[in-house]
Image (cartoon, rainbow, N blue to C red; front, side, top):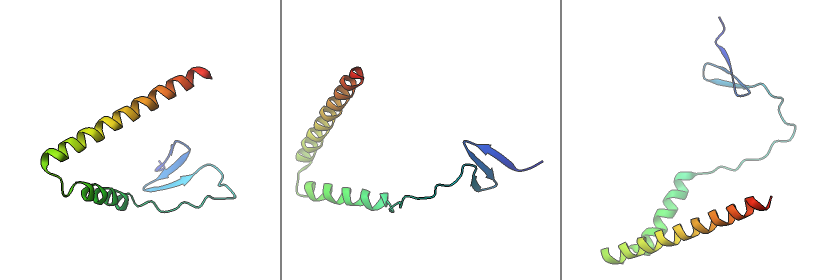
Amino acid sequence: MSSLRFVHGWVTHSCRHIPTRPRRLFRMKIEEFDCVKIKRQGQERLYEKTKMMTDEEKLEFYRRSSEQLLALKAALTKSEAVGSHDA
């Protein structure tokens, strides 16, 4: 019995994936995306904004930020719902 399996357009053998679809002639260049670096940059920006705040000021800052994010989410959801009925 063979150890090859077909999974979503790929043949898997042990830990290797072999594409069953023909390869494209032109490949897109994919830039490296360092998610840990981006996370740390975000943490650093947030720290710089809040490092001189008291605990009460930090609570208010996070409360306001949360409200702004929820309002943005609601606006985007509403605009997507309106846009889907137009189609």
